[in-house]
Amino acid sequence: MIKTITMIAGCSVALGAGLTANGVPGKALAALPDTHKVLSTVKLPQPVLDGTVSVEAALEQRRSVRQYGPGPLTLAEVSQLLWAAYGVTKPVPEVAALRGGLRTAPSAGACYPLEIYLVAGKVTGLAPGIYRYEPATHELQKIAAGDRRQALYNASAGQTFVKKAPASIVYSAVYERTTNRYGDRGRERYVCMDAGHSAENVYLQCTALGLGTCAVGAFLDDDLRTAVHMTRSEEPLYIMPVGRLPE
Image 1 (cartoon, one colour):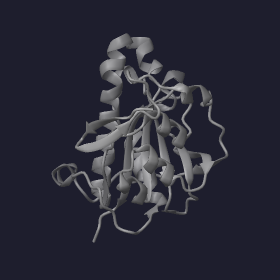
Image 2 (cartoon, helix red, strand yellow):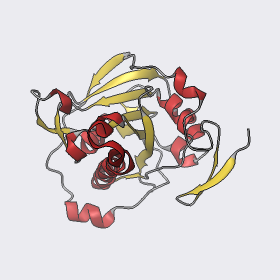
Image 3 (cartoon, rainbow, N blue to C red):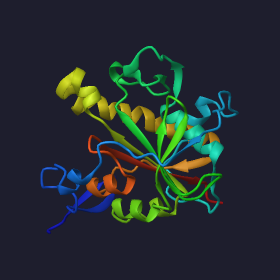
């Protein structure tokens, strides 16, 4: 297979292993499951709603960080980050389409197309594995066991900091949740806007916690789908490695 080299955010990335020339997913898509098989669930600690770092300070200090210290993350930090990304802030159980309620990040038409995963390698109190975040109950659903950071590194075309980070947040989207209402405009604009809103929340929450992250858009689509055990209806959007700031 001939691979092309594409420059994305300053990175030289070899593409082609999982994509056709026009970006349409290859054969690996057919092998993906329709639904997740949940191995176990982990109830996350309640998020802190009154931190010590102001929004203004977090905005001023926010940077993309690609080098991390050796320490693990804590389960409380993971909880805070996932809540900031897509946590429910106003439960609306009577509206099934909201799948729990209104979130920390805005979404066009409250369609909430994003799916969020945690690839945990070194998180105190959490076994290594792949976890899907469930905002309605603020829980992690374990869908694969073991440290999968090497597979994530491979999917990111060898970006070393993806492997070295103790954990990564991975975004995908079920586009139909938005396109069923907004058609092509939902696909071309709204879903990516939703991802940007949520990712910035993660950046700011990392800054407030004294952690670092970097949004990664350079990856092999099919490899990332397989590495994170996405379902067939999902399209990958972002990898956000998270770690402690280097000393």
